[in-house]
Structures are given as structure tokens and as C-alpha cells.
Amino acid sequence: MNNWNKYLAECFGTFCLVFAGTAAIIVNDIHGGTVTHVGIAMTFGLIVLTMIYAVGDISGAHLNPAVTIGFFASGRLERSFVIPYILAQLTGACLASMLLRNLFPFHESLGSTFPSGVPLQSFVLEVVLTMMLMVVVLRVSSGPKERGITAGVAVGSLIGLEALFAGPISGASMNPARSLAPALFSGHMGEVWIYLTAPILGSLLGVLIASGLRESHSS
Image (cartoon, rainbow, N blue to C red; front, side, top):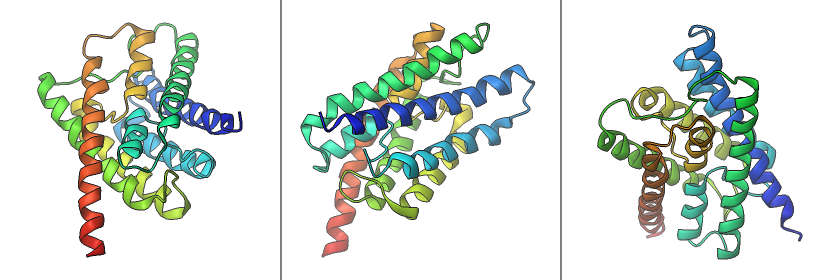
């Protein structure tokens, strides 16, 4: 029972991520681009940075099933936490999209992620983006937790950067929970498989690369 604060932290942090990030997309659509693409990218980066500072010392602020799987694959998260963390993240994401559906009932996509070109292009891009994210997360974190100024700034900055250049192509999701929730509540499930599978593959690749970097550093 004493782990419920970790699950609540993951639920709350992922709720804030999906609510703020997809709300920025929705408001930008409704109000004629006033938020701008740069503003949307900054929103995603800043909310992740903020949540790392807010709940990172409780749960690690994974906020992302792919990151949780990556921590487990790297041996830095116990197996018993994996499913509860992912369920908490999905719950938080779905609560955010449910609330946004009620706040903006006529918005079509609720900030869902879509490939702008062929699906393979976005799939590969999401793999690479998540691989980069996982390497940075593992390199700036300690154990299963992300602490301190370095982790927040590095991870938040990378997410904002990746959203800036890759957002127009794949949506720069890197996060199955972030993509699944708005797809469920908007009914746009056709290509959500990209955002469920590619980030997990990218995360596992990131674990391999981070492991190699650690061995090289120690030798």
C-alpha cells in the first residue's frame, strides 16, 4: 500500500502532460494558430520539466509507458512496478482526454498524433526520437528516479526540441499513453499502432545504447 503515492504521482504527472500538451494543440486549432507550433513544442517540454521537479523524487516522473519499460529493461526498475506504473499513466492520460472532450466537445482530434506522410516514415521517426529520449533519461537519472536540475532541463529540453522538428511529421509522441488517450476519446484509432509500438522499440534501443555508453565510460 505504501507504493500508492508512486502510482498517484505517475497518474497525476501523465494527466498534466496530456492535458497541457494536447490542450495547446486544441486551443491552437480553435483560435487560428495563436499558440503556434513553437508554442506547442514548448508546452510539451515545459510540462515534462515541471513534472520531473514536482514528482520525480516520488515515482521518477516516467509519465510514459515506453520510459517505464526502458527502466525495467535497464535493470533500474523492479518488475512489480511496471504494470502499476503503466496503468497509472494510462489512467492519467485518459482522464485528461476525457476532460478535454467535455471542455471542447466539437474538436475533432483532441490533439491526437497522426503521420503526415507514409506510416513507415513516422514509425521510424518515432523509434529514433524515443531512442534519443531514453538515452538522455538514463544518462541523467539515478536509479529509477530522475532528480535535480540536470534531469529536468535535459529531458524537458529534448522533448521540446524533438517536438519542434518532428512534430509536423509524426506528432513527436514518443509516448504510447499520450497518443492512445486522445485517439480513444476522439475515435481516431486507425494509425495509433504506430505510437504504441514504435516508442517501445525506440526505448529498448535506447537502453542498449545507454548501456554501451556506460561501459565505455567506465573502461
